[in-house]
Image (tube, rainbow, N blue to C red; front, side):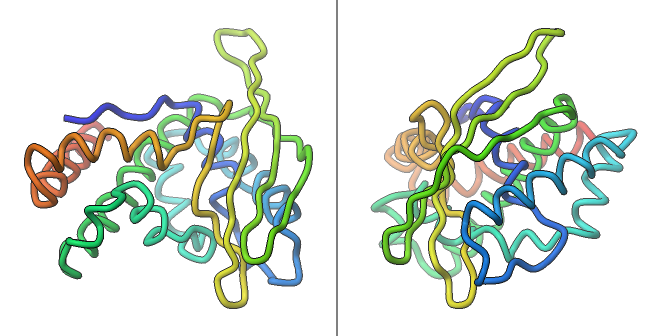
Length: 205
């Protein structure tokens, strides 16, 4: 079974992956990150339980409009993506999406008072990188980290395709684990392990 990427990754993910409205393509990537960060912090702070937090996210936040889950899953699976059938690809996307949702929501619920500061933006054609710093409390101590968000232009909007923290890529972290599983059990084995992990997470709620 693959390990879960450390919770701080998902604190960072939830601060920008999710938003309460549809982003306008006229917005610059850094504006999207900044606005969605504030919205998701407010939503987390209002929740009284993890289950309530997850339900409210699913009811009010159009995450498909902000995240390219297909692109993110493809990055994480790597070269074996090319040999997967379309049915397998759809299963991978759905299970990977569920994995990220479960882990980030449980992590964010424990770190409600996080704040994010935009430090810079670089746009190169259809790809952009937004550099930020995140501050949060852990055991009553202030902690911080540098977080970069990679976005790609998708028709009329920007969508997040990767997140890096202290130069460690979310996609690459999972890619290393997924490749080990695929080399041993194939694409079907990876799908099975993702389903197993998601099922365990669902029981814990």
